[in-house]
Amino acid sequence: MTTNSDIIARSNRAFTPAFHFYHSIAIERGEGCRIIDVEGNSYLDCASGLGALNIGHNHPRVMAAVSRQLARYCHTGGVFYNETTVAAAELLTSITPTGLDRLFFSNSGAEAVEGAIKLARYVTGRQGILAFGGAFHGRTLGALSLTSSNARYRERYAPLLPSVYHAPYPYCFHCQFGCKGAGCNLGCFGYLEEMLRRYVTPREVAAIIIEPILGEGGYVPAPAEFLKRLRRLCDENGILLIFDEVQSGMGRCGDWFAAQTYGVTPDILTVAKGIASGFPLSAVVSRADLMDKWPTWAHGTTFGGNPVSCAAAIATIEAIRDDGLLARCRELGTATVTRLNAFQEHHPIVGDVRGKGLMIGLELVKEDGTPDDAACAKVLEECLSKGLIVINCGPERNIIRLIPPLTISDVELGQALDILERAIETAGQKDR
Ligand SMILES: Cc1ncc(COP(=O)(O)O)c(C=O)c1O
Image (cartoon, rainbow, N blue to C red):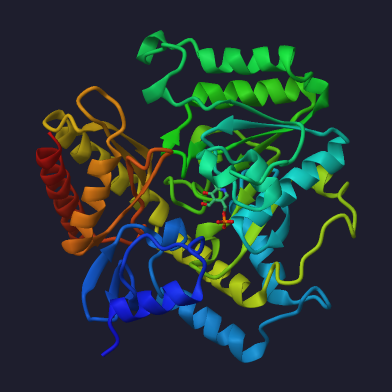
C-alpha cells in the first residue's frame, strides 16, 4: 500500500521546498467536506483547498458539468469563441455587484490582481497604487509588490513595482492608533489621508486596492465605515477602488461578495478561488465604461476562461444559488462565532474571534497578548491527529482560519468545532 510518507518522500525529491504543503498527508479521495488519505484515514476538511472548495470536494453537479464539457472540447486558447465561456461570464456578472458587468478571465488570483493593476493604470494613465499593510494579493511580481502580509514573501525580490504605497489595514484587534470599540475615530483612515498629503498626491494614484476581509494577513473584516470612506475618497479624487475578493468572494462571507455585505461597490473586483470549485479560473470584473477603454492587445491569455473551468464555474454558481447556500453560510457563520465567543470567555488563549459568514479567524495569544504561534502550530497538529484539517494565517501564523465548505452539515460542523475546541484547550494547557 502507498503510504503518506512514500508520497511525501517523492514530493521532496520532485519539488523545490517553495512548492509547499501544510499537512503531512496525501489525499486519495475527496467528497463533500471529507477527504480520505492514501492510508484510508478520514478527515473533515475545514480548509477547503485554501478557500477554493466553497461547495466541497467533487460536488456532483460540478463533476457532471465538467464531464459533459470534457466530452465536447476542453480548450480554445482565444483562437475562437465558445458558448460555455460566455455563459460563465454572463452568470458571474449576474451575481457581481450592480454595475460590474464586464470581465476578463484568467487562471489564478495573482493573475486577476495583475489584470486589475494593469487595467487601473491603463485607464487612468496614472501610476500609483495604494495597498494595505498585511495584504495578500499573490506572488507574481506585480501582485507581490502589493502583498505585505509577510516580509519573507518579498525577501530578495526587489526591485518590485515602483509607485506602490502601503497604508495600515484597519486591523482593530491590533489598532496602531489606540482606538477601541465605540471610541474609534478611524485613525487608520486619517493616516491614509496623511499619506496622500506627504508621499503621493491623489492625482497620481491609479487605484486603491483592499481585501474587504483581510485573508492570509489574518482574517480581519474591515470596519464598514472605513470602506465607505475609502469609496468617497476614491470618488472625490478619480482613484479606482479595487476590491480583491479572491478569498472573500463566491459566497464565502454569506453574500456572493463582501462588497454586497458592506454595501460598498468597488470599480474593479478580482475573483478566483471558489469560482470554479478547484478548477483554475479567475476574473477581473469592472464597469463597462472602464473595460471598454481597455483595448484588444492591452492584455491577453492562453488558458484564461478555459471552457472546462467555466463549466465548473457555472455549476458552482448554480449550486450555491439553487441550494440556498448564501443564507446557510450566514446562519452557520453566526452560530459558529456565537459558539466560539462563548468558548473564548473561558479560554484566554483565544484573543479574538472574528469573521463574516464562514470566513472565521481565531487569533491565539499568550498571556501578555502577543501572538502564540507555537500554540497555533500545536492546535493544527492536534486537530489533524483527530481527523480535522484546519490551517493558519497571519504574519506570526497564530491565527486559525476556519473555512469549511458552505455545504457542511450541522453534525459535521459540530464535530469540527468539538475537535478544534479540545485542541485549543490542550494547547492552552501545555502552553501556560
Ligand atoms: C485575497 C487574495 N488575493 C490573491 C491571492 C492569490 O491567489 P493565487 O494563489 O490563486 O494566485 C490570494 C491567495 O490566497 C488571496 O487570498
